[in-house]
Image (cartoon, rainbow, N blue to C red; front, side, top):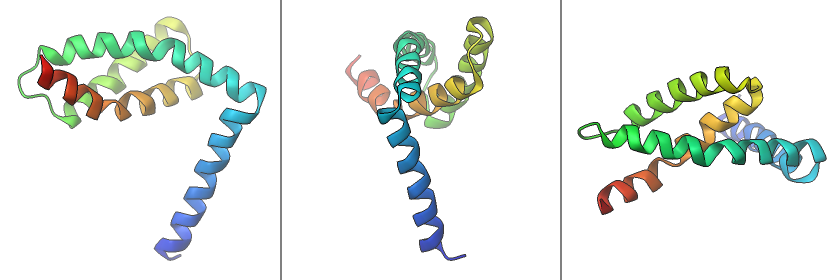
Length: 103
């Protein structure tokens, strides 16, 4: 299968998932659950990464995965919510870099 077809299929799947998150009641509920946990986790992770010298995106990603796994166990989060939290927190790396440069 060519890269174009693979990209087309992956793009369609991502689009369908985003539509589901925005259009269905279950998707809206899932998004609300994710957002409820996202900011407190981000603040904790930001404090942790500030203690490291020369943090990298790889360090951030590892920290995110470990912290979300522990958090999900404590809060008994569904695997789908846990996976989405990891994705959303990993996306915040560029925002974190800007915040680290300011301080």
